[in-house]
Length: 385
Image 1 (tube, rainbow, N blue to C red):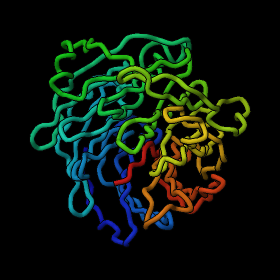
Image 2: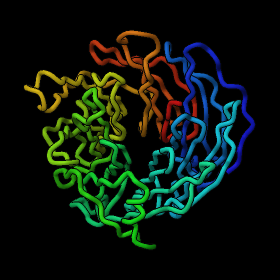
Image 3: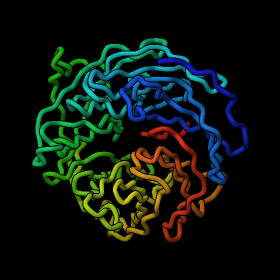
């Protein structure tokens, strides 16, 4: 990877920095794609000029370390890698080191103070890369998985698609086996599970879904004490959102599910949910829908479902056109100012139309208004600093 000279970061009072991962633009990985940076006004949704911060092969997902001083990116290739960067004072990226991802075609990662956790989609391996004293990723601890689902084309084996922290544990969303897989937080415990080059350490299955659902991403609704009250899981293959509630120690069970969108299915195609995320206060849930190319908005009710401990209820409010095609990922901006916002700003990475769009989602009816857009070659993810 190569660091690119950058201009200064915008310094308006409500300016935020966004980091973007991308795919190659119709060429092989390593053909000039990379990690982009731009600013967004958190009050208006206005986007700044994008800057290519580093050239890196197929960096389809990026993650910031706690504190935001380091950034990590997957290389979604058959021999996957994870690259580390130092965020420089002028907003640039200085390469710090690269390590194998522990599997094939890594598509998601999260960074902690001591490690980078990676979902390798191709072979389903979950890997943990310990960080050295300088924050550079080192050799992966590989934790494989076994299983399959009924969709022969998409579920012939495990496909780790997303990593989240749930009640302090890494939880992997496995599209191929219709499961959530949980692992220990401690590097010592992870190391004890990793069994040599085959990475056959067993997972604890934290939840199962109906066969063929194809879970892809999840969002955690906390109860105010940092304890998960529910999980919302977007499933790619049956186009639904599942509501999971805690059951036994560290496990979850399906309490309900709803259609991910009311938008019509495209002629000759299907709707494929991609990313799911909550507003900062947990009152709205957003789901990006590829196919119909809309952002689906739900109201989240924690009280109408019944007594304490009952599952939250999702009420579909609206499907908003995105101003782009094939929304792979999005970021819900933290609100600017004090008090409850009248709207949420959502920044969407539209893969097939090569643009980034900003929607203002009204809290009252969930309807979205396009407020800005900018061209970015094949954006795959957007992360707020």
